[in-house]
Length: 97
Image (cartoon, rainbow, N blue to C red):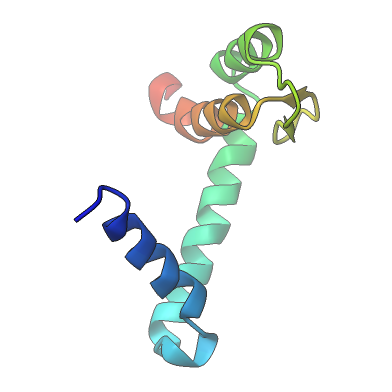
């Protein structure tokens, strides 16, 4: 068994999943979780920690041929950098609270 087979199986499952395959209660809760995540990320993007991480990412994790935009910032960086910045924004409210 290769190391990618479990990840491939999960990816195939996700891509094959339709809205009708998910119970209504689960779909509703997923929507609530996404709204919560976006709200926390918006609030976190205003913290000093989030600004520091975004500035670091913009200076050190610039994209070469592939770029992504940082959420609530817009600067083009590597996909890994954009993910790091988004993660720090969504978690920074916990660290400064």
